Amino acid sequence: MVDNAMGARDELDNPVLLCGPMCDLHMYRHRLFETSFPVGVPEHPEHRWLCTRNGYLPTADRPFMSIHGGKHSRAWQRKAAEYMGTPWITTIRGVCEAIPPAYAELIGRQAP
Image (tube, rainbow, N blue to C red; front, side, top):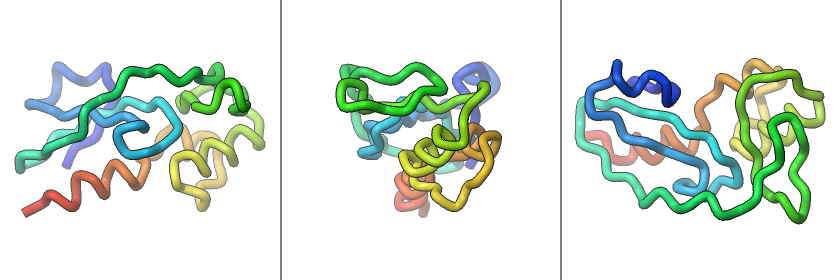
């Protein structure tokens, strides 16, 4: 399995797209995956939930996070790790580069 950001689409062979809501996560984080076997993915829902700006914590009015690089606080890092399901990640760079385990699980359950 190969994982990459959206900018690498042209370098991958028939990748599938995963995003947080497809795995019941409250974050918008598009990642592409290329596998050696066919992978079925849930429908990619419209991004209808309001999202905090990158670097800001979610609020009741903006319950989703956008998780990618930038200058962030420790509070943001902890909340981003919680939203991704990776509470053991303790660095901002680690959170920004991590693959949500739910993405890997969705693909792994379909491996032959």
